[in-house]
Image (cartoon, rainbow, N blue to C red):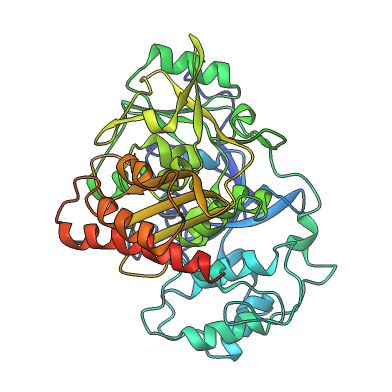
Length: 478
């Protein structure tokens, strides 16, 4: 694929087509917007943890052709939005005519110092326009208007003004039929634009087909693949990483497969976690437990399941659950495709069997699913945190005897791993507290946990054993 731009890179910002211009390919959306005078979005952390930089992008929806999706502008390179549509807090309303979200935030005291407010407004607007939002009885995390507070889980208020922010969210009605952003949902989002941008010695390209992408990777094994940029964006912002070649794969249709049954579930590697969550709609209960605990909605709107596996991190949240589900990966290269069991995929700290010229194409989960599953995440915060320990369980019990058991672990070794010794201690044994207590001692000795700033080795081991006991008691009391 040529590295020269096929067209002048540009995107639509608040309804106006704007040229990206002569900027570094590593320039973030946030920095680019602020250089354009759109200073509502702020930099609070540069890691995707605070939401002060939140903006809206037009993405393909699950309940409508287009959904306005909130993302972290501090993580995305501006080159990745070539040809796309973006709305900032300035584009939602004006001082003369406030947007309904802005109005509710103002009249209910949802803005204190104001630093975080534009980000809250954008995340709140994404939920305001969510097609699946319907009125209901409400609970401690949902308003009677159907507003899901988890949509704001990636936005932090340093003034601790959460109650009036919640009040503003719960006071929102439905968009009017003349609301331009609501009407926009009925038309498809922009197609992926073929992009080729060079700045200095760095290059950004967006292939339009999987074959093109694989050809690039075959020629340039030093290429940095990027999808949601929730990992690479941190490396660029915090650690100064400047890949010579960045290849965007998030819009490749071949990597966005989704199918369910009858013998397997197939999840395209470039699907975001939010897309998978909504398309599965609870049909894989283990993943249904995982998703709300994975970072924040802002991160899940960008992070892909392939990216979480591709980093090879021992503390990623999806590997323990997918190991328990006995998942396998389809790896693709210009040489062809191969299938690798996830249990054989990780080889060392951030090392995998995936070759430099390969991409994860599809994650495959066999059916039927185990009837008893759970995902336990032990972290310092309930949401938007990195795991100290993560455990996935999948269990089949017949006539009181354990017929099949798979346990996936994260955070207790250099790689995610199956708890093989514990599985062996449980298989063909009675599903009883005595059996589980014996196996819990085995589980506590699995892996090689270490001391770090998140948890001690002893704590991690103790949490493994306690997790199995918790799983047992939750199941027998269900």
